[in-house]
Each structure stands twice: as C-alpha cells, then as structure tokens.
Amino acid sequence: MGNIELIRDLTNAFGPSGFEEDVVEVIKKYVKDSDVESDSMNNVFSKLNKNTGKRKTILLDAHSDEVGFMVQSILKNGLISFVTLGGWINSNIPAHLVNIKNGKGEIVEGITVSKPPHFMTDEERANDKLSIESMYIDVGASSREEVIEYYGIDIGDPIAPLVDFKYDEKTGILRGKAFDNRLGCMCIIEVMNRLSEMDDLNIDVVGGFAAQEEVGMRGAKITSQRVKPDLAIVFEGSPADDIYFDEITAQGSLNKGVQIRHMDQSYIGSSQYIQYAKDIAKEKNIKFQSAVRRRGSTNAGAIHLSNEGVPVLVLGIPSRYVHTHYNYCSINDIDDTIELATNVIKEFNRESIDKILKK
Image (cartoon, one colour):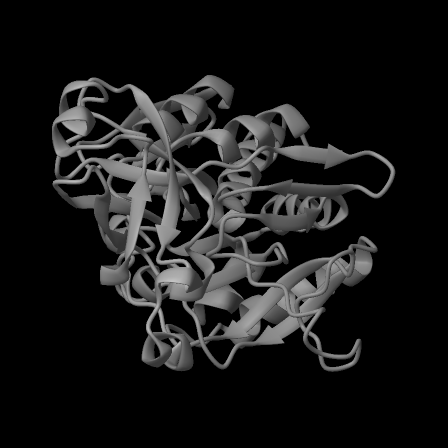
C-alpha cells in the first residue's frame, strides 16, 4: 500500500506556484538511493545511483506546485486583496481557510470572504456573480497597520488553502489538498525507490519534480531541457468525473485503477507507448481506465515537444474536486499507478524502446 505518511507530508506542504520550497524539502527527505538536487526555480532532479549514462533515459515527471493565491494589496480596513495562482472557479473560493506565508516564513491563517447577502443591492443579488476583485482575505485585523505590523504580511506574499488531511482505513479514501499534483510527486518517489532495488534495468531513470505547472508548465520546460529524455512518464492528479457521468461514460472513476490519458488540449499520446502500457497492465492484472480529455493539460504538453520529440505516457490518479480546497482519491488507484509505472520501466528492453521511438 502507498506510503500514507509520505502522502500526508506532501499534501500538507505549503507550495503555491513559485513558492514550492517546503515541498522540495519533503521530496528530499523521502527520496532514497538517488542523487538529488534542486535549482533556483524549485525544480528537483533525482537520478538513480545505478544510472550508467550510456543508455536511453526516461524522465518521471510530476509538478510540485498547487493552485493558490498571492497578496495583491492590503486595504485600509485590514482586508487583503488577492490574485489567483493557477486555475480557480471564483464560486469555489469564498468561505474557506487559507494560510498566508509572510516574508519571515511565518504562517498566518485567514478566511476568504465576500459580501454577505445582507449588504448586497438587489442588482448584486440578482446577478450573483463573484469577481476576484470583490473577494478578500480577513485575518482578523481591523486596519492595514495591524496586518503589516502584527502579522508581517506584505504585497506579494503567497497564499495556500488550509486543509486537514485524512485517511479512512475502512474505505481506502484519502482527503486533503493539492492532490493535483502531490500524488504525482509521491508516485515518482515510490517508483524510484522500488527501481533502486533492481539490478537489471535497461534504461536510465531521472525524476523531475517540476515547479509552476499551474501557471503554464514552466518548470517542465526547464526539466526537459536539462534531462533531455528519450521517453517520459507524467504522473498527474487527474480530475475525477465519476460523480458527473454514469459508470460507462466516466473515464476517471475512483477505485477503477490508474487512468491512461490518450489526449488532452496539450498533447496527443504515443499509440505505441500506450499499447505497451496497456499490455503490461493486462499481463500484471493492474486495473486501468482510458481517458480522452476534451479539456485540461499536463506537463506532457511541454515535455513531448522537447529534445527531438519525446513519447510521453500520462498516468493519472482520479481525484475529485481538483483546483478547489478539498480533494478525494483512492489509495487503490495510487497503488495501481505505482505498479504500472514500475513494471513499464522494469520490462523495457531494446526492442520495446525502439518500437516506441520508431527506430
């Protein structure tokens, strides 16, 4: 079973886009038997100690950032105006707890607020539309001076959802924040730790924990340039759709296995690579579900256009309510994702690699 402590530490870590430092420290704590380093952008690179430098290279990717906010201004009355980091639906933002990290690294709790109906005009109540400009964060202060002097908050400080992590042993369901994409980070760590115990790999393996995916796949543009992979696996906390569609139509259901993504707005998958993964899943009795996404993107969008073109396999862990404060996922789907990725890499040989690369 997946490492619950690792998942908890990763999801609890503060790390909106551009402020992933705490996540970097958690990653470094849990990676074993690998050379680990990070860069000025908060990208983390983990290389198996058994890499030879003479074989083809596979990049294991997951982004380490989460959707969050940034302090835009501090009003005279002590309310904090903010902007979004990543894709939010405005109606999901108000009435939640958040953490603000000030310049000293201290965490200050606040509440996202909007005007209550008692003070709305008839026109405002009729429109019922929220803009970012009409929402604020309240830390319990009564003036701008209190926010600055008592709490040390300043313009540009990052903000993340404040959520309690929970694992239900009866159902195998996890609840927390940032499953998009700390679950992917967890998968890289677990897969690489397993591979470190194998002596017969036919490919070099590099983990790339990429920063700032939620604001334009920025980190992956750097990691793919640096690693120059021949192949890649992208792990993603994918939006679950099982509560919106029936069991036939849904392609991201909890407890239905790892999601193999064929396409989205950012990339079209390699049919040879996908078939190779499906064959292994069937042989090893690993549950999987296929997905063709009408919208959305992953770091595959940046990675598959790097080097001279990189075949990418996108493996998703269905997660309900991503890009909101609270998420649900199943430990069984995490385990299936780790099993499939490990076996995909373990079973690589010259013939299978050349077939995917069309050599």
